[in-house]
Amino acid sequence: MTGPIMAVYMKVRSAKIKRSGFLQRLSCLFVTVRSWPFI
Image (tube, rainbow, N blue to C red):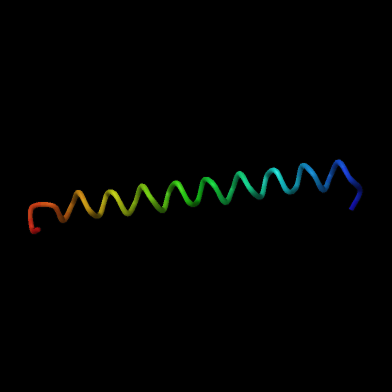
């Protein structure tokens, strides 16, 4: 791969990782809220 394409690829990949991490936290929070009455 050439430089610019590689840079864009890395940027997109890090953005995807961030987004999946955010979704993971969100679903974790959702589960916590759902199970709140049982705690």
